[in-house]
Image (cartoon, rainbow, N blue to C red; front, top):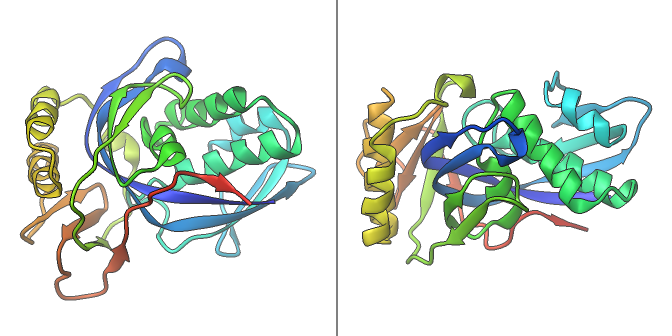
Length: 247
């Protein structure tokens, strides 16, 4: 079977961690974008993940293997470990594969994917963002897709570009910043793509990450920019109008 998963780039996040991982996550604002990562999924003797033909060591498998043994072959146009939510894409693909192949209940599969991200400190809001899609989303309530809540924000779209610059651990940026909720509220009063970039830049600078370009911000190991790219190689993105889907 084949599944297509969009990427996600968070601009603001506020972690909310509870005793049960399925209820944990973050509130915040994220871009959910193309290109989709395409995964071929089949039964296997042991859980395995390949990205662009290379087998990877994927810590989330320690949790995901509870759903059954699957081999995941992904074709990705963005790199792993830079801030595109690719680890969540892999986990979500595994969960949807288990749902289709092993007839695992969908809510259980999605909760397991979300838990695999939370427990390994790989992410707090990417599973729910990528599952629903929608371009620009507001995560109103933390948790797995059947528990958390999102709102799709309709905006006038501009061209968006990203530039991967450095591979970094997600755990280094998962921490509460008290200004996050204030910046989310600032955006909700003026729901435009320009305002999203403005408040995301303020937030990520509070984390110690800055971008040298106008109309841009740095999230983890990548820079995301609105309107036009600067020098060097950039990846062009369109909004992912649809979330994860299976073919």
